[in-house]
Length: 248
Image (cartoon, rainbow, N blue to C red; front, side):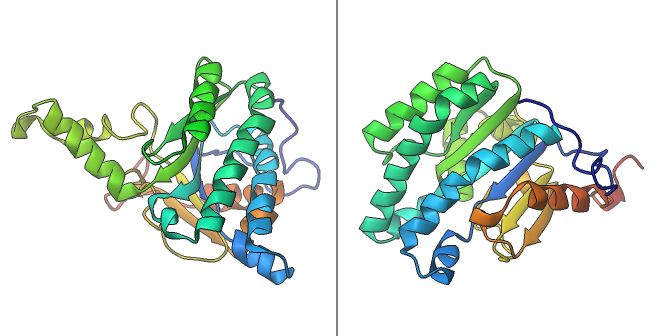
């Protein structure tokens, strides 16, 4: 993406010198955003999709290499039919509206999640976006759609069984290689807008050593400044693996 000056250079705020390679975001708070404004629930989802572009632009500016966004969970199918249909329609519109621009900016789009149950028209758009952008490398954008962390692990185990691996051949690397995110680094930072302090079945294998950042800001209001704050908080932490600081 087009590079812009570092967020700290204009007003002498701390400079970001340690950028996480992989950032994952739980896009939460759309419904509360709508209720606070006396709007229908679907308007919150619409505002949330409108926010995607500015967050993607900011991620590119800050030098994040992989961005994973939790858009629709395997549990979301249990929501009222009208809400589910509105979410599916919004997803189609976002792909139609943003795909060419993301391709121009060098973003690679990847779907992570189960493809069954995804309506044919939406699935065709997803697959077209993946094919169009498959050689791009400026930023990898994973869209977690029809995604559940436990379902992902189940699918990885099923793959191991289908491939006939012996028990002694199954280790953490074998499982990681069969996750939806195979070939990508695990997330360094997981961000949750809306103030909720839980992972909600999101990247539960990959998040083993991720830093977690929570903000009361709702997703439709989560902008470049909010992302800067999250990255600054990450930078100020001492990451630990197995109880020891990284690099020690």
